[in-house]
Image (tube, rainbow, N blue to C red; front, side):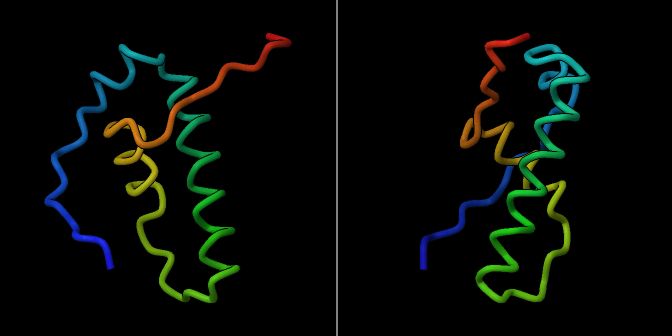
Length: 71
């Protein structure tokens, strides 16, 4: 398994300044839904804290928000 480094505290204010409140809510919602689907496919039962996990991924830059071209 990969080595887990200690997570730093997510700074919500910094994220909202970087991407806006609405975009942050949408991104976290979409990513947590993706994580939930992935855990179902792998047969994992523990799906606790998916929203927190999605926030950490956005804060760490592991997941990026791609804007819709139609907007």
